[in-house]
Image (cartoon, rainbow, N blue to C red; front, side, top):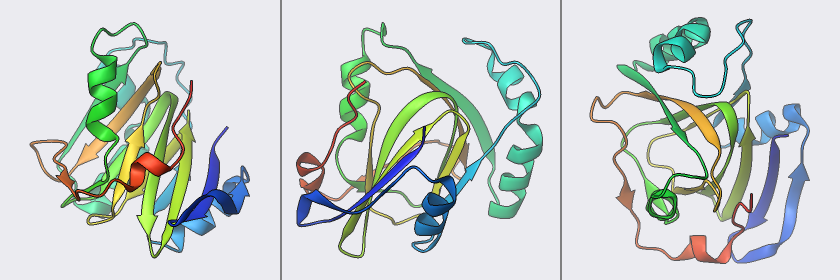
Length: 181
């Protein structure tokens, strides 16, 4: 189940907001320019489905997002807990960074924790199956897939090179929650 915890960036222990209500999550994130939606499809997408099958199942929503945001490419990424490089992949995203494009992720399966650092607060967004999050370009954030990742995500890009991070050099992410799966 999706969850949002909002904390002051100087107090990683005391929540300002703590909710699993989808409407409250969407409203709180929308207030800082972040899109949060739930998608569904009629197709039964099996674990390990091919990229083309996954994209076809969500084509209507993908096309809507791509047209509205001027996006140029889409792919599917998945990671399982038996991947021998899972720790390396996890570390890659754990430091605060920004992008020069919106970071758009739709969780086809599994979960991941996005932490957004905005206006003196940290918004910890646990995304689960059916959640779309779009983090605006320039927004400092980090992502945790946990020590035992199990997820598949549709990624939508304006940059055809894919994921390119600009690390802030801040160690703030070290003070906040991690995903323990």
